[in-house]
Image 1 (cartoon, rainbow, N blue to C red):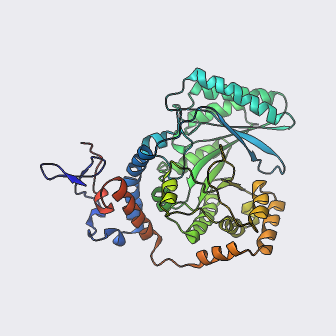
Image 2: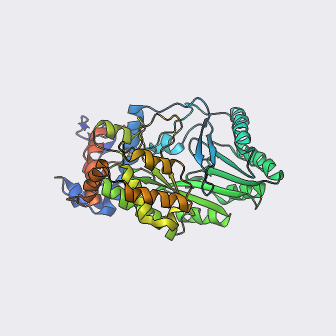
Image 3: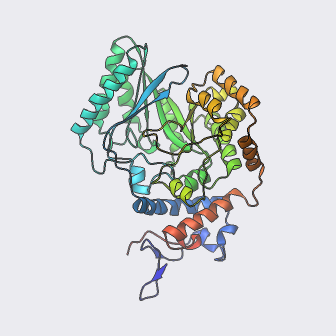
Length: 428
């Protein structure tokens, strides 16, 4: 924090710090976060996390993508089959470019605005990948994405989306069943875009759209992930259902600031609530992996974060039960460039567990096999994991999160949390 000649206070961002009418500013200045309620911490996070993440991205840099990205994933409900996910080189996720993005996410950007003709050239290559992958299947799958959001016009202009629909429709004309898969932040979804999609693809095409829920706990979602779902997200999800879209919610296992017990409990609750609240037909349970240019990457370097244990993933699947597990995908172990640090186990448990996880398609045989290994393997690392899970925190979760936010505001905004939440983004 610094002062100008008039005595006004400024943080590291050049943001003037002053009193707010918010109830948050009523806390005492001696570790005031210890007196904050969960709702106050969540509100504070919405104010300060985008500022922290913008500064972090500036300091750590962004990954520049120079080509399309393609890798294969198991196909849900079709044992033994894998299909390609293709992400085109687009301008980049606008949440990342604007609000700093999610704390664990870095799919990069093009470093510039990508022109329509360049996108068309990438589409030619993408559909050659799909053609080869689909040639022996009666159900043809097209999993095509932007680096950020398919329905963001700044990444995929409307004419590019229409060209994608037309190319997919050609496959349907051959008499084969079509599955179209993509992802988008919910704020970019509206009735006109969905109507155009459904009109062009037809009613027979199956459509799956993934979106980042990350956690159904708003405090964790905003303070630990910086997700910032739109206020009307439930209406967006209802709109997707209205157009017969299968909604795939992404849930992250063990966001930053959570311990092993927290991570398990939050993932289980988030999966249950996503189904019970009619927010999803399918859930992608993402095991955290480490990308260097993210907050998670920095916390790992500081020894302030550890990846979830592989046994935590197994525990989540066990707790949700076979019925809901049949509607789960277990991802995070296969990535675009393969260099990210991922969840591991020891020499005794990792190979048998990952053998099931890597081919997981949600069928009963997958669940039964995983539960069989869970009963039979009792390695040393599982004992260490159980000790971690059994630890009872001395403070409530929201206080532990607030203390982490305080460290971030001191490092990135030049002010403790109680001052940072009084500041407004007035650049001087």
